Amino acid sequence: MLGDPLQTALGRIVGAEHVLRAPRVSSPYNHDASRRRGVVGRADAVVLPGSAAEVAAVVRWCYAHEVAIVSRGGGTGLAGGAVALEGGVVCSMERMNRVRELEPELWRMYPEAGVRTSDVRRLARENGLMFAPDPGASEQSQIGGNVATNAGGPHALKYGASGSWVRGLEAVIAPGELITLGGVARRDVAGYDLKSLLIGSEGTLGVITAVRLGLLPAPEAAIALVVFLRTRAEGCGAILEVLGAGLQPAVLEFVDGETLAIVARAYPGAAAGEGVPAGAGFALIVEVDGSRAQAQAQRAELLELLGSAAVAIDEPQDAAALWRWRDGFNGAVTAARGGKLSEDVVFPVERLAEALERFEVLAAEQGLRSCAWGHGGDGNVHATVLVDPEREAELDAAEATGEKLFALAIALGGSITGEHGVGWVKRGWLARQLGDARAVELHEQIKRVFDPKGLLNPGKKLARDPV
Image 1: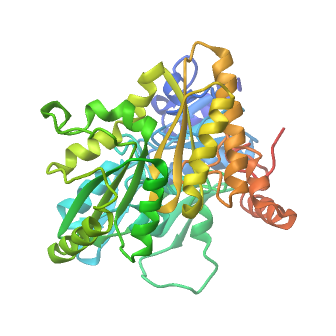
Image 2: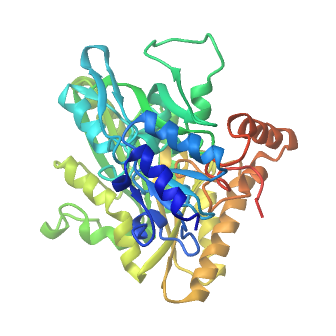
């Protein structure tokens, strides 16, 4: 513990009521949504700034006194990226929740980092616009955290992840300077693209305080289809057929057979006898959008392309119910045995079938049941093993499976993460993925330029294993 001077100094900046110390630094700030074993914070304090100027002052004090700073959004991360495992000050952005500007006629919005993702999407929708990225837990996640991890979601296939929508941002960098990068101009190639270094940096280069977002007019129509197929090979082949046919779906999700078996009872229409059909061992969720004519034309092409191979094709009339079902996968899979370990990895889409098969084998070799689902169109897989959280041997086996999975992703030409970040859980693996000493050095040099003392989210994201 750093003692009372920390409480006093930070209280002068943000107000004593906005500084939390033990025992008030409770579970929500010492964990993320994964609740991973060993990923438990020991923050000396949590500070809740109410303005960018206060964030800058907090960082300035911490940097002067060599205290680590861990920025935190809604706490929905799954890689330990916003957990203060080495102590220091957690800078939680929850009070920075104003939308500074909303200009529907210019298709843009300027929310502070603590604005919830669901509110960004709602405000866009109410004004006839669309903020397409739809990372999970949107009611809890915050836009600053989405940008800091470059979070994606099902619609990232067509519309890109969160970073694709960032026109500019405001951030605090060491030793406590408030800067703006990018701006309102739709095109600007005058300087180095520094804002893109902050996007996906997981708080290791600076603390994002506000984000200038570009928006788009909402599509006139969206049509969702659920395509049930017999096998994994047929399902992955169907993904390649859709892409190869030149279609541009907004969503192309996959659900493997094990996952489908777990979530089948909750499928919309199941209670009325219109659930997952017999013989289905794989499913695709495909959504097309655009004008009504464009959406209907793409729907017809999909039916013609996939109709002969499918066990059945369902067109849910209640799209909201379909997405509630999809959003419930995590909870349903966790409940199957009481716990799970799920890793976010990416494979080249043409090697998805091979990757899923080899992952199943890796898990089985550890004595674990596995399942997988994810964003099939871009190969982003939530590869999951089911565990009893009370059995340490199963947790050991799950972590061993995860390590082998990361190696598999690299071997097949993929990535150790597509949206959840490197964080703490995957420390050391970035260097292995980069595979080039100079590329590793460049990452480290960029870190030193932005954070010469190494106090911004230490131990996270960095290319080399800190151990």
